Amino acid sequence: MEVTAPLKKIGAKATLDKKHLPMTIKKSKLKAGEITLEVASAQVKSALILAGLHLEDGELTIIDPFETRNHTEEMLGIDRVDHPSGKSITLSSKFYPQAGEYLIPGDISSAMFFIVLTLIAGDSLRIKNLLLSPERIKALEILQRMGATIIFEGRNREMWQIW
Image (cartoon, rainbow, N blue to C red; front, top):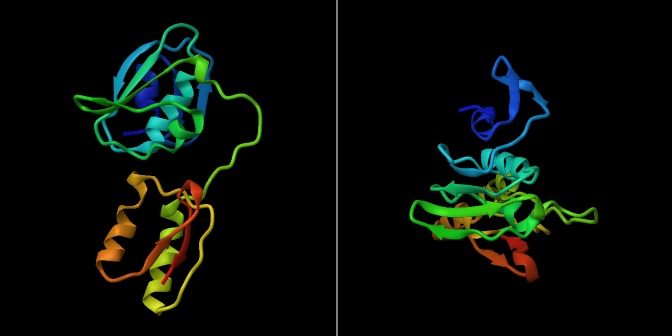
């Protein structure tokens, strides 16, 4: 599924060139309502969240049956709630972020290559400012079950030491 499909469902005028970038987005009036993610894609969910911030009227509820990572919701202060089909978030233009400084933590999926290579080499590695939400640490839990020593420290669930 291309990222434009769910955006079109809420009224966005978005097209891809031959199903790939570049993407063209034209001004459109987005529809409030409810949409359920059809694929386990945090990128698709984030696209819907960012679009939902531009609703002129009403609210958009996004139902996530896959419980994908929640970095965008956390950054914007949007609460996820239990839903019979998984988790849901409801948003509107009131969540539109104010200008300011934002700390964007590192992504575990990008760091995982270095983590595994370090473990194979039997060495140690220190990584700072890596966001470790429950949705993102499953691979680290598997590595721990395989015998890796992984130490988590810091306030905001930063990871500091792996060996």
